[in-house]
Image (tube, rainbow, N blue to C red; front, top):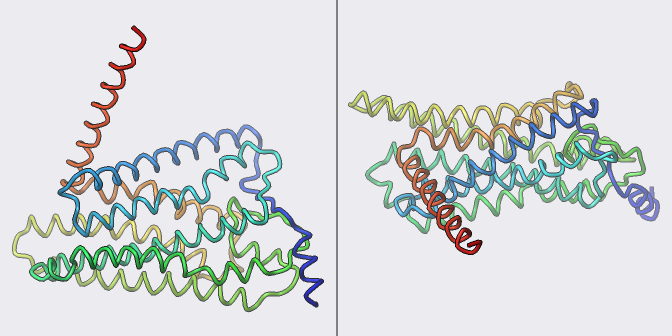
Length: 328
């Protein structure tokens, strides 16, 4: 195929159809309401953590700075897919433009890659805090924490850039229906008019690398943390550390377990429903429960969240009294 033919094929598909969850209109409305509630709760939960970290001076430490950035990431992670999914529940066409589809693909995978880097950075921070407590302040300085945060964001957004560019350059001449609720690399590669072994290999390799290497790093970090916890003399200290590490590890296992099914295991064995369910878990469920996992077992975070709530109550009271004065 020459260059002119490839260009003409690329221009023949100007939009894609995201089939989402094919079902009756009534079920679509129910799903819209359910997804909307999950979306709002995710924004509120992660937004509360960001406010707590920003407003409480006691939380201006590496652990909470990483957690605040992680919460900020989760908000944009759900924003990369959920708003468009909600629109499609009520839309008849369920169409997304060619450019919009690849922008969603880029941001969705970039956010996922950034989450892998942040989870690794958070486990790295916990390792030094628990295993090297005397050296922690000198190792995890404010400058190093800042550099670590910047590295997570930059590496996350650069990691999947090449596969997105390669896939976007493929010719798409129809059909244009994607049996998913997001623009994913697998369905897009299937819709290409020509075989794309290099694009497929690059996409699979980079996905597998970031997932497996970061997961291995996290497991090693938490294994070392648990060994250090077992050597603690106080039973209450051990229980507290086990409780915190256990909840963090549960969040990690939920995220990586579903991501591995989608992007590391052989794709040929997937049914049409399994990718949607797995994507729902790591794109919507984990951002929803992460604020609970990372904050409810943390006394400092709970205190800061109560302060945030009190500030909002005071703001509402002030706003309400001003409004009554203006009306009067």
